[in-house]
Length: 479
Ligand code: GLN
Image (cartoon, rainbow, N blue to C red; front, side, top):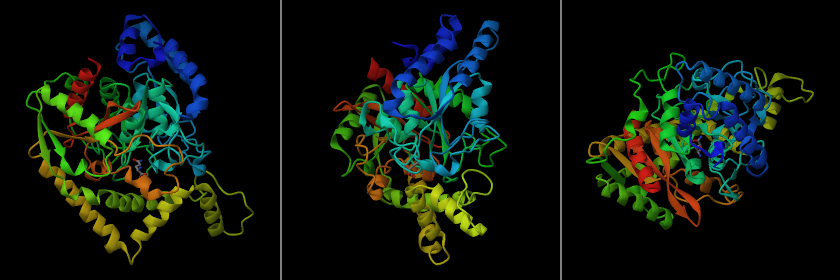
């Protein structure tokens, strides 16, 4: 097995023993990118020179044998929605195609402080809007398992890069499923932490009340390692939570005995591919054998989740995206234009893609004076009901298990002309964002060689329970 295919935890061990160095790992990753990138298209930008310089620095730290963090010298890919100082950050959009941030997102500062190696910026649906990484200015990211299929989205570039060995770890963001769904499609492990767990400072906003940054990796332990590094209170983000920061690695080997796992009955209904259901139920059965109690629960407002999400997300997006006007940063139309209104118009017409425009129109509509009460306010009320469903269900269980996606990875282009069908792919993930809850997708098997993801949902700020269950399953799967 090549170095780029090994887990971060294993590489960290080898680095400590001095058996390998970070330069070798970084070179192995860069070689894999050279071999695979033309077929997969995971990256908007790669930063080989900077990565090798960072690897050199990491190796110096190892030679000094000081206090070394587990991420030191490990190559990480970053979704192109997180601001990286001096590195182009496009959000997959023409409107930011020339944007070079002057500062780092807090999560980036943290991984750099720990001596990690940034390998590049990954492809995504424009501004995070999509479920297939097809809405990107650089074209789609292909699924490494089968390149005729989508990688999922919107963090498809990050998930595909992790799955193909083009990096060891990656950061994604999740507004309605964008870490969990591509993880399901590419067979990686990906976690959306509780809202407020990871600072959003420097994360380019799509829908601010839903957005979260999280880890994507090839193992649960690697996810825990990266989460340890990026979480924590940050005064630069007013919604960042000032809560205790556990060592997530400590939760991995806890016992499953007596852990109550809920199965929300509304998540196992028509529309779910029966083969996916079988895989998830098989994993649930194994967890039961290992000592967990399985309990059926009900989340009665689930049927409103997708509509509620697409009202709230588009409303917030239409407001957040108002800042791209060609004046302050990013692309500006170079037409001969006589007044500023025309300049805004032409810049936005040429700068945004179709899906983003669709959402700006939808969002502006639901916030408009005549429709605010009927749509936006109503959606906020239903959002509360959805959150209350979880509060009630969590009175009797410690976590819940559902499929991550109702379908397997689909063909490139298959849903591009049917936005509603594309939106329905998010049916199992959006409720967590609406409720601020943590959730993880982990592989639970394959159907026709395609990966199937299982979602584990936790109580607010109880990522530890999710990691315990996910790790228990992972051990059973590989053992
Ligand atoms: N697919 C969902 C959307 O298009 C979620 C995207 C995300 O989580 N960024 O809004």
